[in-house]
Length: 123
Image (cartoon, rainbow, N blue to C red; front, side, top):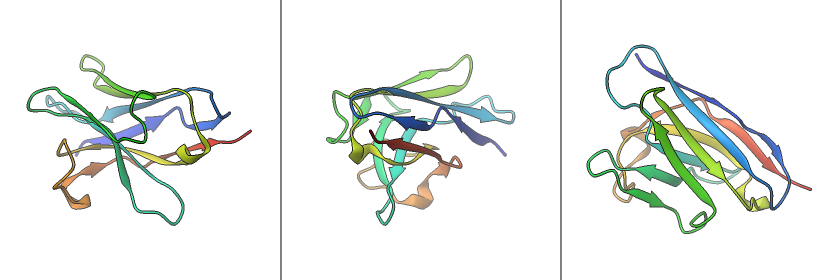
C-alpha cells in the first residue's frame, strides 16, 4: 500500500518558521496526502489544515489561520505545511493524512496516516 513519509520537523523559535513535507511512498496514480493534523502530549489529535479533494478548497483550524499554509505538488506527490509565526502552543507531533476534508464529521479511522514528525517551538 501507499505510505506517507514526513520530513522537516524539528526545533523552532517562537515567531520563527518551519516547513514540513510529506511524500507518498509506493506506487499510486491517485492524490495521496491532503491534510495535516497534530497531537500535543496528553491531547487528542486535531485537524490543522486540509485540501478538499472534491473542490480543492482549503480548510484551516482557527488556531493556525493566517499563520500556516498547506500546499501540494502533484507532480512530486508531496504535501507541504508552511508554518510561520510559530507559537509554543504549536508544539506537537504533526501527521500528514489522506481522508475527508473538511473534517467536521470525520473520525480517526477515516484517514490514512503518516508516522508523524515532532515539531517543538521553544526559545
